[in-house]
Length: 277
Image (cartoon, rainbow, N blue to C red; front, side, top):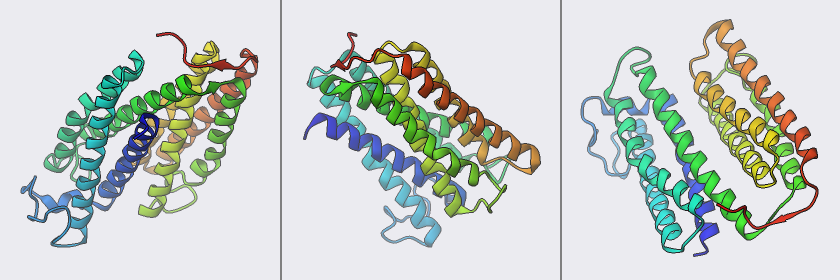
């Protein structure tokens, strides 16, 4: 298989795994394991689940297992194929963090304290690790694309424009501001949020390719703010929580607008291939 397609598929699978994880957490499916983790009710990949919640839990494991194998395959392909050093290191980082992510996934089931039976710290670290793995794979995919295609200021602005389209959805789905933040709303919210994070990461990386440092910094800061917003959204209770999430969304929007405007100062000439390591 073409390496670029393998890497893009692995990145997409990682985002899907994170989304299924959101559904698992918001539905409380992990609590069906109680003290019987890892076998839980004894079902295997949801083939014979004790109930629908168990099916969700085992489905998450199945998707995560497939994604883990894809990450390993992408890492092996990157190193055996002699890809750029930064691509190899990004995939290596993703594959090394994956077992740690599995451990934290277990902790979200085993640690039943503080809020809704889960530890806030463990859940936050679990989500932060997922975002880090996704970010590393987005970076590897973007760098691979830059090595095989062309990067221009116009492409940066188009990616930034796509990111800007996500903000009205994020604002409209601000937890309990306009709509009930149920499972369906959370699924859409996080799906759009992950897409926004990926788009801003691409803008930052492409900006760096063209030497547009200010664009890269603004977009990278926006991507970090988006992750903070997604972490906070699940715990945004009361007016203060809603305002905090809304404020982060507006901050990320402002940074995205700034990144797009600053990209106009980038070199108009198209750059072919990736920058040197």
